[in-house]
Image (cartoon, rainbow, N blue to C red; front, side, top):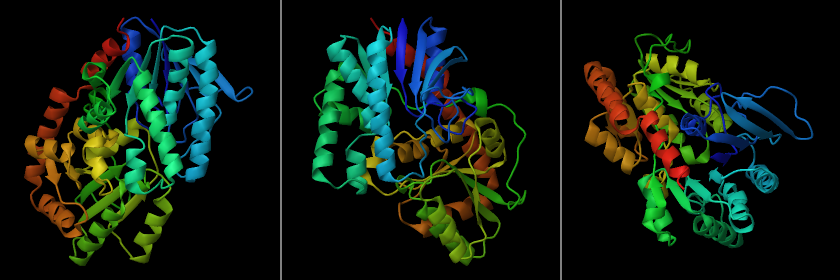
Length: 403
């Protein structure tokens, strides 16, 4: 089959963004299908194409994937309005591709929600099978966060969500809450597959040259956060925990934040104003270098803002990278990941908005290093048994390419 695959934020492993779509495309190719990836230019990602854009687009083949990349530079540090305009521009350009390319199945993945627009057109005007993957529930999440308050905009997003779900022949949900959210919109359960983010064991479980930022001693307990520094991530919780640890005199515990985003400048300023010497900010790194950092780390930080919609409605890449690398995880919000961590004994689940509990967990970890070793083994066993990317990508390939 020929699969036309839309993912605005696509990246190969050479970038610092999530590589779910790359892995899924590779699985489709291994199963004998042809994949054309349609994407934009993502600041944290790398498509693998290097030639100049010609009239706003460039094309090529990278690792067996045919790529159509639009010159639409996107960054998590952009304003909300600029991001919306880029989302809409990508959607309109994608409609043209959906009408002109030859393919058997159109697949689209969020975010943003506008990713479903070319699939809607392909389904109803070209009668092409449409498979839609939902990574976050929109407009539920931005509404719960207070990012979007305009009732007209929320209504329009709700309509687009409903039309996207009801137009799709099949859907993929990345977490239990997402699957339930799709069902609540009237979609039959047999049309939905639950395929969470997976663990790239081929990247993180093998040996790498380990490294630490210069500010972190080899004897320090190093807890790392790797991902977007945005409103949803709630990294103010890390600032508060760092302040609590510094107040306790635990300068042997370092918190390292790797990544970028619209909140990074504010977080750096807050740490500076409070003279926190136990928190380190580092630029994004590619997957290979990230694996080296994780090999030297002691704990992975799974942090999100305390928004109930997040509890069961997200499937964050970083969590799966942590456990693939054999890192215990400190999670600071309730939900399915907190339950998984507790059930599998692969880390710490602390109450949200509680810097004392956050600091307590890190202190306990620093004082009981032998427990971290077993937690790390449990984490990697969980990655192997439940979230092996090879297994999940095969399930994905069979679901997308069904007759």
